[in-house]
Image 1 (cartoon, rainbow, N blue to C red):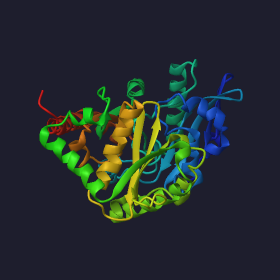
Image 2 (image 1 turned 30 degrees about the vertical axis):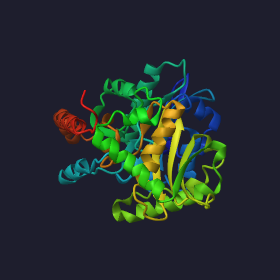
Image 3 (image 1 turned 90 degrees about the horizontal axis):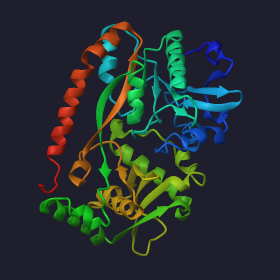
Image 4 (image 1 turned 180 degrees about the vertical axis):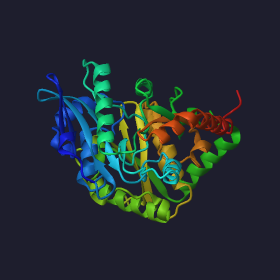
Length: 398
């Protein structure tokens, strides 16, 4: 798809200039990170996004064409929006296929669409990146107007922001975006000092079950070790790709294998300060773990991303992905642990269904009308599902 060169740079007023950037490498890391580092989430930092692009994981070929909106004063970057032109809906984990099907029945081209999220990363925190001290309202209005103009000029069906920052959601609703309710499964630290404090939240049956699952891993002759930062040997990054790839392959079409080996390998050494590995070792084989989970951490937050193992070991998944990360999180004062997409196992292990939102604007009047007419009903149904899930959590009755 070709875009007009007029979209590349638009002079709005003497103070500001806007540019659409197709490679984050064109922006100095220090300037981008001055906007991204203050965020709670690590997933919009330059190193992470650049690695997505440079590794071939988020590119035009994979259906994630980078199209980042930037705002400059003179030569200083003062605002940015990580954006991608998508030709499909894979890797988003907000399942808008029903909207695409509806558009097809109406004879409307749904793709391409403009998307704001960290690629293949279903974790809350998306927002425009705006430098401290700037007029956020003015810049937000300017950026929304530029997005509307870009989509109109290039006949893009809609603009979608996924897993948005809750405070930013209210800002964008004032700009006419519609909020769609979803849920993730999130662990929150309720003042726990030890893992036993966490266990004490459960009813007796589930408390015994968790202890049994951890015991099964120990009886298999495995010990789990949490590795962070400079403790992590370079070899584990390539091995993590192998385990990630094998896990995805087991699920076939649903496997969600989007990242390349190069993506994992390039996390070393410049992003190891964010990485947490939980590695399962057999006795006397302490250089090659038989299974691993891969997490990221920033501030008081922990994010589970991927996992895999070289053999089927009873309950290793639960310990490596939930229990040992929780134990580490408690020891580090972590307040929130998002273990990643899916929920079949998580709700039984102390991860309540927790609301999150996406934001949507359709530029075709028929789709826009249908969205406005039905989104409240859709959100009410989702809220009932959240309530039903949380009524079944295996916590003690209070």
